[in-house]
Image (cartoon, rainbow, N blue to C red; front, side):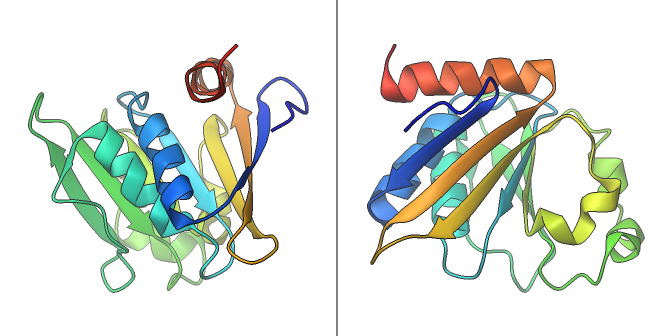
Length: 166
């Protein structure tokens, strides 16, 4: 899990359960208005991570893959905040995302979790946390975190400290 540079972290997950736990840890730290992008091929661990993130954040109902619905909305009972979980897989580009109001969700105080963000990259805010999932050997996945913007660099540093110590 070397830190490559400030705002970057790499980790090898040894299976879906560990990927879910990593997401859970991040979910505990997600703040209102945060934009978290999950990138990677089918089956690489995005939804397992998203499920854990939702658990850590306190999402009701539990986070599942929103593949057949572009946006799932999850409420946190403790404060009424919503977590929006967007699946951009079926979108052909940023114009498709604008038709259902993705740009309006960026202005919302609620956190936003986006799978397949590369499909809408042209309208994503510059400040965000980008998490890329890559196949490794067997069930292992290489997960790379890249924070853009000072608040996301701080978020990633706190995540690294709480998850891996130091």
